[in-house]
Length: 206
Image (cartoon, rainbow, N blue to C red; front, side, top):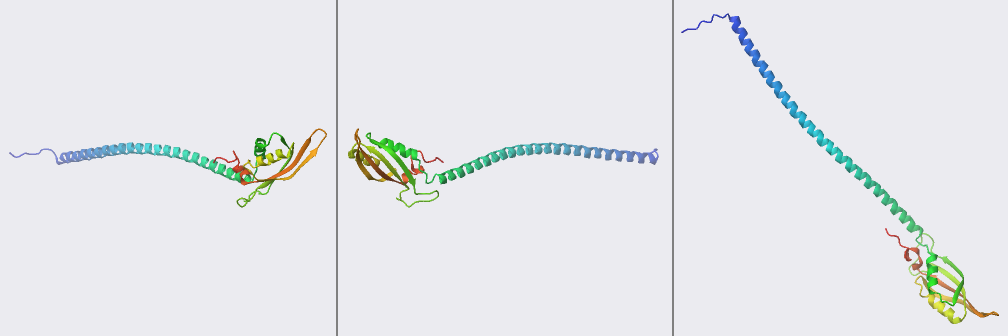
């Protein structure tokens, strides 16, 4: 049976245009929805990357603070070493006379007393003496009751580790109305053990 279309051609054309328009609109909506999905995905990814960047920046800031603190410690250590080297230079040929006087007080016989003490240093600041060379000398004058006490005094000087070559330059008996006394002059040389760095308590701990 043959169908007869009684609608004018214009109406059919309009219908086709409407259908095409609907298809284009649907395709546009689909593209827009896809773009929105892509935008949301990229936004979430950007937020995640920003969070990672913030974490990395926080870690870098913490590491920088540690580096700064270590640099401050390194500066303090360098300053300390510089001061220690300066102190070592300044005290290189220093003799602590208080230590020597204490050593003498430990060995002096009970019947001997000193009337004079003088010392001198041969090694100047920043110089190094040859091994075995005395670093200084001490002259001691005193009195006792007998020459035997003077001999004991001389032997006791040899027990002090900082002293070498103890000898007498004078031992003379003098008489007074009250008693007889023996006056003496003695000398010792100072070995390198008398230097501050070689004396007990004279070394600095790095």
